[in-house]
Length: 199
Length: 143
Image 1 (cartoon, rainbow over the protein chains, first blue to last red):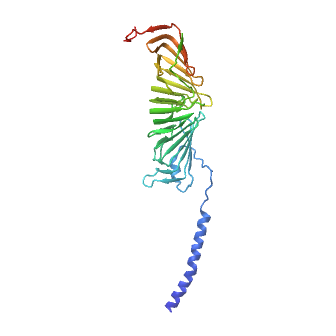
Image 2 (tube, helix red, strand yellow):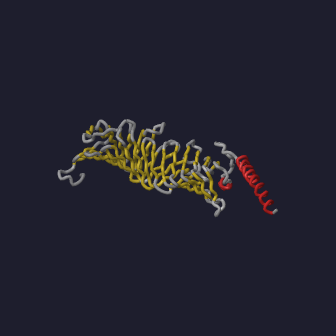
Image 3 (tube, one colour):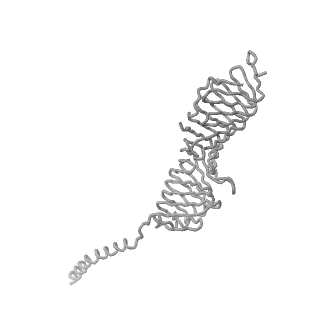
């Protein structure tokens, strides 16, 4: 008698189990949100931790305004919060747009960006490229970008193109000279500019 | 006083290399201010200065003008000039040096207030209180 009961249960399970699996699978796809390209999530203030608290976002976007009036826009392929240090994490293939009030734009791309809790600073690394609308296209290994005010600082040498030629220097920095002053791209540690006049 | 820079085959479309310790570029108009042992090399001509302001054309790709200050020297294979400041109108290939100008060519030296050089033509002139300074035969120093 027991065998009969057991085999009936097994037979019934053989049918029920796959059906349950199918049900679970279908709901999985039903519930997951698709990836809407280009939609921006309006973060009002410079709150980077919010970006990290949303690990599920496939294209995290962070918008903020610095004290000197520049607008920052950080998008990335993915955000990986650091479970050991809440509020910190790594952002994968970040793209940072810095639009300064003088109408210029700096666009930075990198392999990744490290965000540390409480620090209004982004450490871009893994090969950073900076395009400045003045006509400079610079490459460097790593660079810090402040989030509370406009300040980009390469950690090492930079090299790339300049208007009408090429440029290389020991270090590079983009900041505002003072509250009302111009924004300046400062190259230090020895600079070499090669300019080819139009022939 | 007319001067010949015969030793200079200059072409103002040759590449220009500028080296310095520091460069600050204003985002407002792209003006570039080099400072600290500035050296400008174009073909056989070399200019050194304390600082150099480079102004770009409004489309900000072409250099229009370079203004050197803080003691300037301009050296070609055969001549050397020094002054307080200089302005190089790059497309025109014209260099104007001003302020206690002293041009030495071989054993003769000419002092004046201004030296205007047409680099491409290889000609120039010294203006203002022009004084020719002849080195003594053994060239020990300017008398």
